[in-house]
Length: 83
Image 1: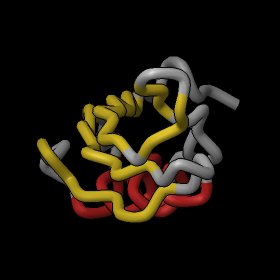
Image 2 (image 1 turned 180 degrees about the horizontal axis):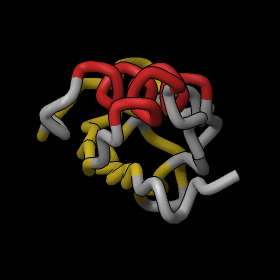
Image 3 (image 1 turned 180 degrees about the vertical axis):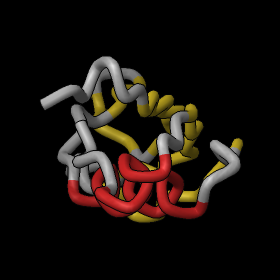
């Protein structure tokens, strides 16, 4: 899960980012695009940067690993991230 951006926490900003991720046959994120913004560039960038470092289980087609797209929702909630 992405680290809650300190500036967003201080300002009480919450939101949901939906990312479109192109995943390689090796499970790496080749590209991470914002499909739906949270309305906050702080949250959007935190989600995009973190998900870009994730490793994914590659998609399978006819018993072969293939490149594929994945939709990844990321919810930022101050209650869920309370210290």
